Amino acid sequence: MAACIFCKIVKGEIPCFKLFESDKTLAFLDINPLSKGHALVIPKFHGAKLTDIPDDQLSEVLPVAKKLATATGAVNFNILQNNGRIAHQVVDHVHFHMIPKPNEAEGLGVGWPQKETDMEALKALFEEIKPKV
Image (cartoon, rainbow, N blue to C red):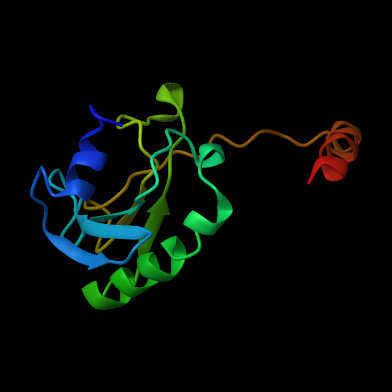
């Protein structure tokens, strides 16, 4: 996509601090890091949301994120991938963050507003989703 900043990075039109590259995947340091070593892993195939990317174009993403976590020496870290504006996606090209969490102050801060479970409703949801998987 012509206007996509990550596509421009893939094409070499915008420089990056490249950590890994293959025919399907690119990883580079985030220019607005939440902590030291914060990096992005992207499929080179353009798609705004995870569901837009063919499975074969995603095969290296988690292994590369794992390599980055190891390379940075991160003991605690988050792997984050957002889809859509209300889910906090800013760049409309699928990307995975590998964010080291060296202490309570640095890295990703996450709220987890879990709800009480209605087991009957959960069972109904399971029965709705399971046949589609």
